[in-house]
Image (cartoon, rainbow, N blue to C red):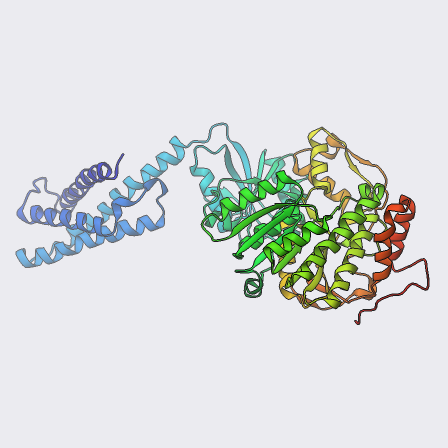
Length: 610
């Protein structure tokens, strides 16, 4: 029905209600059946005209009555009251007598009939048209504004297959009360009881202000049940219209392990990125591609995506060009290998970048144990090539992405990254370019991380394999790590090793258990299997050695490690001779040097002052 059709229908309907109210009032006040007197006829005309005028003025006919609430009732009160007031003036002016009792009864009848007619439609829609049939009984966690908004949407949405039957809220003032006709049955500790007693099939978490620790507590209670647990969309997604309130998503591992985002210093980042030429190596990888996305938000003049994986680079190029099609960012892709020193120099000369983010590296621990020469070529020589090219072409800031495995390394991969840190710190001593490294732990969802592996194992029916029951790791989401890397670049003075605060370490076995539960299975259905620590792995990872620690953060979640002793000559020796060494010898030499235990006691060390 169009608005004009709806308006005509309401005018006819309301005219009947107003006239009926007037003549019933006349009968109730005078007890006379003959009510067609001139005062009544003129008063009726004035009330009708006034009612139409104020209805249009206050937009009464633009209200969607299926969503009527207190606000609509207030408007009906205003319209009816305002339509009666002009009659007082007309009766006094024309008849020198105000029929106050008649108008009072008329006002009451109009309020009752007009308001009742509107709300009867809502009741009919809610309890007849939208009567729940074969809907899944749902428990809503959180009886605040977000929870009630979700419950109201579910009650009204005939297309939804969920029907809220109870709330859970730790606020004791709300417990044992009904909200929207739905009882608040207890706090978080009563989730399992409520699911069992009320035959709950689905649980929806609707508390936007939850910390990750609080969400973890709620999820662990939900995991005790067989109900499927979902969470409402993020508030920013709702505000921007990306998703609707009723578009719930599964709880993800990132929700349980991630942390509240840190506000970035937009001004400092904009100062060294906006309008500049920025180059990202390894731009097709998990971290490199996310750094590229984050950098694009700051409107660099040109963004060079460098890597050797053509498919991944093509994907990120298309994504950035689509997302930033209306901006003036010039996105350029270069297929190149950082081991090619000559090409690195040519590309630096061609584009003259002012900022370089070096994310390209081999990161898989067991593979590098079996191929230490590849770790040298890519992680050390590749870093040296891109760093020398940056120095030669007067790049302002060079940020190398490192890893927590570079601390007290027991693996070739960790040792190669530690030696690469020394390479960029050594370059910083003689270059006008500010060379820094940023060190952090595992990122959730990156290639080679345990989560994609666990998901594949769960999809196949299990078991999920964990190397050791006591193995722990630090975790961070890819967007958060990338934002902090960019922020660290803005803080660089040169020579620092920035360390990102990774929060509390997480047991891998707990991560596996949570992922099994999030996938809707029990531990008995999927199973856990311990396979033993792989070559080069440690039970615990560290972010700083004791002699590197600065206690004070230079920015929320960013520390700066103390500068340490470099072994430039020894690194050069490894680079020059690694191809003639056997793998075991190369592995031992790299790990010993990275741990500052050079075999030749007479070897020279280049100290950097603390």
